Image 1 (tube, rainbow over the protein chains, first blue to last red):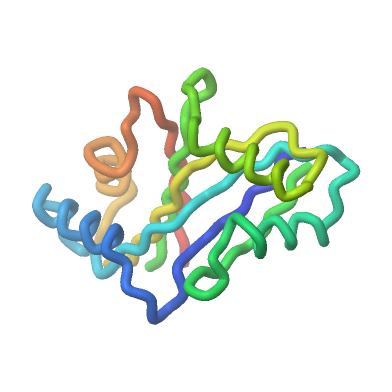
Image 2 (image 1 turned 90 degrees about the vertical axis):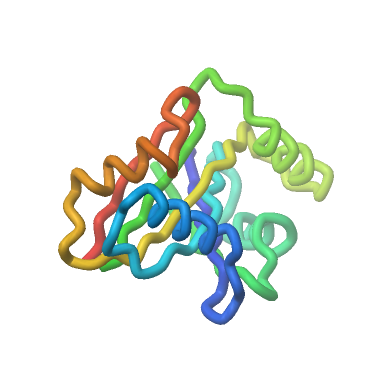
Length: 77
Length: 77
């Protein structure tokens, strides 16, 4: 079973990687870019026996730093 | 307008970051994890005037390395 975890920085947290991408896009001549935020996408291939609670635990213990990051779990078929 | 770009490694490409996450999950006692792949999520806040073609160009020129990575564009409201 494929499960995707989206990890994004919380609102007020500075994002130097996003800033660098924003700057690079402008240097390449792309206009109309207001803001860029960089995050992570982690794709897990899990056994059917893994529960939603376990996936939450994985996020809290390892995949996301909940002090500065939000995560969203998208459980696949 | 929020647009999300999902950048993932192509099938045959080795993913040391994913392997490290996989190993760490097992060390923490999580079982039932068959595979882990790490990717990027880039959130763009774009002006309404930016076309789909321009977003494709951004991906090809900067956001994804199309030799080893796939990208998917999810255009928001």
